[in-house]
Image (cartoon, rainbow, N blue to C red; front, side, top):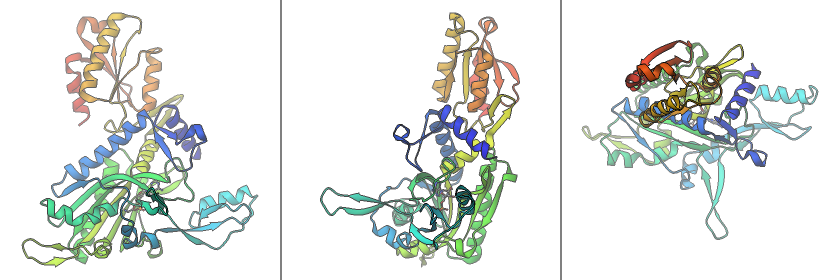
Length: 428
Ligand code: GAP
């Protein structure tokens, strides 16, 4: 199964999904760049999340907050003190590992022929420091370790500037940074990554908040399933008390059965009044005038992890052929347009017209005139393009094209003037 990660890493680089960051300088551990196909997939994923979490509801609004905040935020939020991982150090080569990373620890011991000698676990803070200012001493600030705090510190702004009333949510997608000690498994654990989060503010009521927590657990799991992840490869893993983040009253992870074992894809946290309480923020009910500190139920997903797991889930081999069975809503290109032969002007001209029209409407449409049709199908299957459209000699007479579907390889003839409607219906 580890082999699958190698295949995906290689495909991701070869076809322009994910490249190692700063590669020409030897890379930089825990940093990745998304290529032309990766950025499409990532944008599609974030768009689907936003549609589901914001546009699909009438009590969720969005935000986009700053990455660097007043350093006081991180003191008050408890991250300066509590945002840490326990680490152990190999006494032979002084490499550091997470104390709870059993697999990596065992693998490392193998490198030393099964010999293991470790220091006691010590905690290391995950916040990434940045130095700001032009004169010495420079001011120490932090790249945000979670995107969440930007939402909390703006709680009163949102309440005062919009019409939200509790219960309501604030959604945000953005970059977060952590000084991870053992980045790895492609983008799974990176030092720069993106999160997609909902902070849902509720009344401070034990029973009601527990029901809302359960509601969001189900919502989030079914979102992954609706975009193609097999439900049998998803599960909830409740955090035992000693593994909960410093802000969580209780918490669960949505885990995916990755090639490297069950792994966290998203966290659902009951944060109680921890954050708004610490920031000394409250809410006044506009009808009863009752004032209270709302509780927060949070859904916090990793964009990069979701993208990686959607790639893993979509990867199929059929003999020599690789097919990425991505949900068409996520696929980087919605369709590819080909002239049957690249050296026949009439075919190329007609195909080009179709390509440009579809591109104007759908944006992510690709063109290929290289090699033979079989090779082009092969190349498009490998990047998950759901439909290939071929203009052949018959098209010149009947104004119809052959549309070939990725997963079934079935072909049908569709009138050129019905192509937009055809794709539109399929993409709904
Ligand atoms: N605001 C809550 C929070 O940040 P978290 O469980 O620490 O909670 C949420 O992180 C999600 O962010 C994780 O489930 C994971 O998908 C993603 N994530 C966390 N650390 C990551 C890392 N180093 N690399 C990639 N994704 C990460």
